[in-house]
Length: 199
Image (cartoon, rainbow, N blue to C red):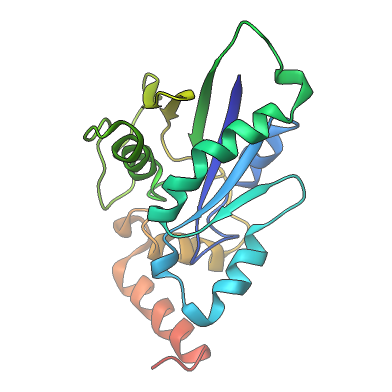
């Protein structure tokens, strides 16, 4: 029984999602998790939440601590309600965690593992994109139900829709600073703050 967890940052709910990954999912059961709610503007959190939702998504929209409590039962319910995944011989869940670089995929896996198994880190995390370089083996995160997560490298679309999307991704750490230029990023950040009158 397989499902897919899409991870996106709450402070860039649309820019932080790869449209090609969404298309590739098709009818496979999937959950959209908006991560890093603490970094989102509190005045815009409702907007972020609505922007993150799309037809066919089940959303677990909370901070990482609460997400950890909700994901396991939500996955079990989602797969249980999908007739194509009713196979008596399979009692375990395999979940693929996907998203753009540096969105918190490895952190989510480690958090679920700590919560349900009381075990430490199973996958490396860091503050820059590109820490996970290959699809890793299945990592057990829960015993009842038996659930495994698979960490994946972050994937950006080959072409970004516009410059603004690229700047948002760079400012959130999905693109390495030197590829865009720190001066350009700082200039865009100042422009965005002035535009919202957040001085």
